[in-house]
Image 1: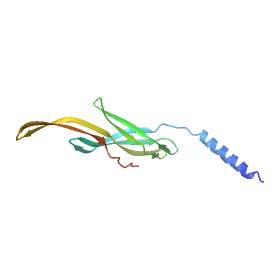
Image 2: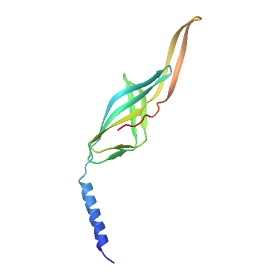
Image 3: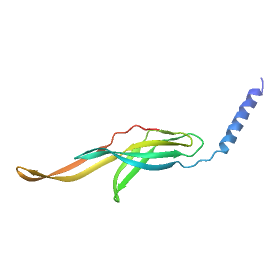
Length: 134
């Protein structure tokens, strides 16, 4: 039996390990670019958070989960969660759009033929997941 295939396998593994040793990891740069108001109603609204994600590494990376909380005027407004993998190309920018979970409460004052009326409004839910654009 020839020792040649074993020698080739060892050389390939050694080369792969040497290549991996030379790699370093840099954190991706994630910047909120816009908050898009998709719809507004009496019981809530539809918002999408659009992020620019830059992968500074020379290799492709994948996310497994992205969690974002958003505060407006110092108060917690909502949460966004993406559990779908994102494929981030080497040294490239990607646009990532996340939905925002929301809940609203308030009152509406109405002028009716029967006099002034106050109606409570409430709503909660999740914004539909938008497409991930690259």
